[in-house]
Image (cartoon, rainbow, N blue to C red; front, side):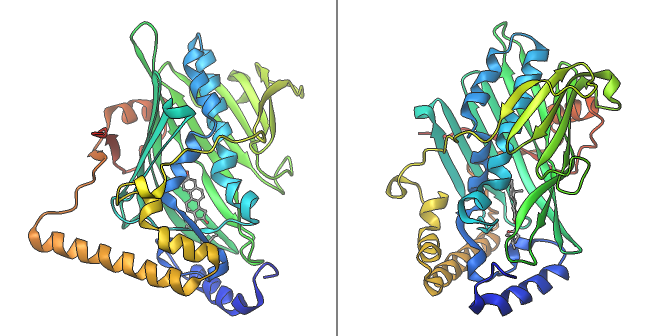
Length: 375
Ligand code: 0T9
């Protein structure tokens, strides 16, 4: 563990042993201070909106094929934020704060042109629901994680999906199901965890086109970290022969595309994912409501940032105890907690329709519909 501060080496060793023998919810384990992030997991949906330009460009697509490519470009443009931002900013992946039930994260981009609403809709297991809204386009999703341990790697299955809805000029609607890739957390042994993506994820349009994205890392065919190959075809990808487009490269850097199935041609530039990012704008803490993440976690986050871990720990215990008390009170009063921004939707027909098109087995998970906010 060369990245582990000397004073925390023993703690890191204990933590690794705990992880190795653990199944279930990693967020429940307490980790040594050097690996703690002052940011809550409820903020992560903002990565979907950071490629704001790519998100807004989708509605300008003239044909289903063009829009399928634009949705694919936006999706790929979100990945470097989702999976390498913490490493880029702080040198390693960090353990995010575990959101409390009903925690909210709200913000916008381009002076309100695109808005984000996120809410922690479940605490055990942790599930975040979110909605991204722009002119004539919304993206609604939910995300939970199932973790297991394999060798020296944490394997994280993302449970959840997103549905992008585009309002077309003729008044009709087009939808896209986004499934989420599996991730591996490597570098744990050295105290410098980072994320690599693996296996496949899908983007299924209601018009019948499917993007199948296959992820690979160091030591795979290309040998390069953070690599992918995506095919756009009618239906889920089986062979390269039926592909309308093939896009390949690195989701942290450049990718290129070719029309039709490629020989070895590199093709034209599809996306450069290493450009500047457009961070979300969030109200100052003083103006936030009491359920908003940065306000609720302020004392904990300040403690972590200043290196005052005793203060952070006292504040965190206070927050957790107060949450536990609320659940007890609700149970005693027979009035279970109600989410404020989202409602649960079981067996969302849109999800099942799109999942059938790409032969994705719908997971046994709920969807969440955004209720809107009364200003
Ligand atoms: C949804 C994303 C997700 C959340 C994070 C696994 C993880 C929590 C979930 C899946 C976002 O859209 C994308 C990116 C990163 C994922 C996190 C990486 C990570 O390590 C944590 C887990 C819970 C840990 O903190 C493990 C402990 C620690 C030793 C690793 C730093």
